[in-house]
Image (cartoon, rainbow, N blue to C red):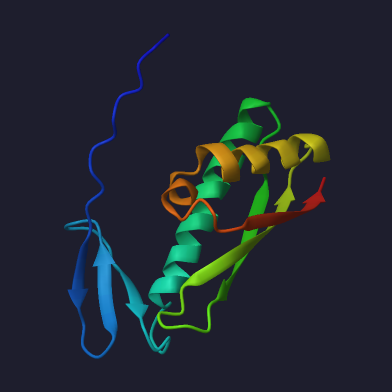
Length: 141
């Protein structure tokens, strides 16, 4: 059995840009804006949903490519329900996958999503394991 090598620590720099805005990214690389007021960028919670959607999408694309049915197009809408308490944490998330690719069978796309969301996505594994994350699939061939 081969040993899995640990990945290096994740490191970003978030630079305050005034008000509730931060420009974040890898040191010395392009940044993206988060804005607590959602005026000039996504909110931090929006960014969390982006991270979950893109992380699971990467895994889905990789799994389907290994089956020799590569994804031609994919979009993922992530909707996070928020608590009414303070802080208004995310209490559940629904991921709506839209996937297009020649030869992709529904059963294999569903399995790829299930594996991504429950086993491979490190962002999902970082979140509260009791938080429900469900998904839907719209598949076009």
